[in-house]
Length: 146
Image (cartoon, rainbow, N blue to C red; front, side, top):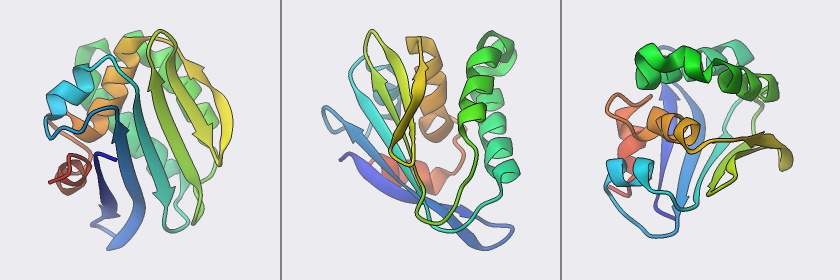
């Protein structure tokens, strides 16, 4: 366990999910985590029922921020991830595990949905939470164990 945090929605004053980041070796260096080629695991446990549209929109914005002009290069992978993200109810767990030489394994409610191949997609994905312009700075600090 590297760190944990809560993703809140300031507009609605709601706690959306709690997140936990697991690494092979603890570190507070976000850049090192993103670039590391070892196993990484991010788990999101939803705290309340959340609209599918809201979560997907947030993830899409995160991909756009992190991939920038290269976003179309990842479009098929993003669309695949979104197709596996169907509902977000209280207690639902989404987990994302980067496995070297394999890719990003996605589990929804403890069921393996599939794998998105490629180290580069995984880096962009983890950057949504740990990059320069993360989805939430307080959540990033928590995931880094600060």
